[in-house]
Length: 493
Ligand code: ADP
Ligand code: MG
Image: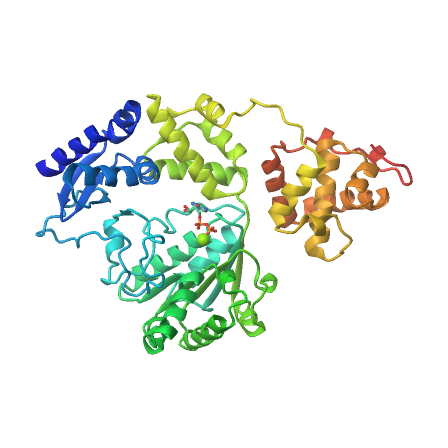
């Protein structure tokens, strides 16, 4: 901590008092520690990651504006993480930059002001990987920090298998699942694990969007040699995130096809992530799809209740916040389909807790913040249809239509089952909500799902996850439709 930094920060706080509420300044900004101020960079340290993220999102712009007001010069705000670092020229750590360009991961969206975040978080471990090579991996996304449960354990095991350099049998892994379920986390974890075994491994972790932009820029600037060098010759493991972005981009797909083949022949690990299975990817060349499906395909589903609670506990430890059991279960029950949302909710609660002087996030705070129980809501068949469509990522039209392919027939049957079991809607009424289907079709759908609930973990997970999304509690045996609910020719319910 330098005197200059402290003085500067105090001047900024004073100047901010006209713009930012006193409570926010006292609770959120004053606790920030001014570590160093040098070469137009003010380095602050936050008491926890939540505060840091909150300030970055809400106040970075205003702080930089007031830095300019009080000094007459342009300043950038950066974050220091413990252990303390110095920005002074004698320090070993390289000076922070906004979006430090990775050595092996090309920066394809040239740092246009619009694209680049205003501030960057300095993770000492991310500045250089053990081999001295920055590879675009997020230091937080390691296997250690990944919580496993039935929804992701296969994908997790496959990721570990791919990351094992000595016993590896296959070198292609395709991870797929909905947004915020851990695909990026796992692909980063593979990179870290490989680096742990071989610190000199040249890891290229890149989003398909960045790959595309890089490709286009390289063509424009006639730098294809370098481009191919980066992704083929100088690459020991490639992680291409969100491959669905390549849809319809034939030139990039073509280039990636050759990249893939080169790495494949050299037996280099290749990890692809996508929001859907390879066979469901639209606008993608057949030869690419067959390559994607040629290795391991690991699906990640929405986490079950217990996994969500475990994730919350893990994140709370990681972020140095305390959450009691009641609160963890209440949050996990309220946020069911997306881990990113789960994290965001925890962050919101942590801020609220610290602002209200609580040391622990408790059930009362969760109920108050998430307004649980504030508004009694009546769930309708349409709500169920929407939730089922979101879960399976299909269109409402397909759900209520006549297509008998499994990818729409199963969601349809599940929606009918949920409407029957949780809302008690009659079979004919359910049929009417599905484009006038006959009640006998509804009855056989409900029966089918009941059987699948015993036989298929995929169906179990889907029903559980959609139920959680809708706030349904698991049905008690007595609540299940009784045999009289299934008249052979009657209308039921
Ligand atoms: P995706 O790439 O599938 O959209 P991410 O990998 O970006 O999702 O995950 C979103 C956030 O949720 C990340 O912060 C990640 O660390 C966290 N996350 C997801 N799944 C898990 C898990 N099983 N354990 C711990 N954190 C998880
Ligand atoms: Mg992702």
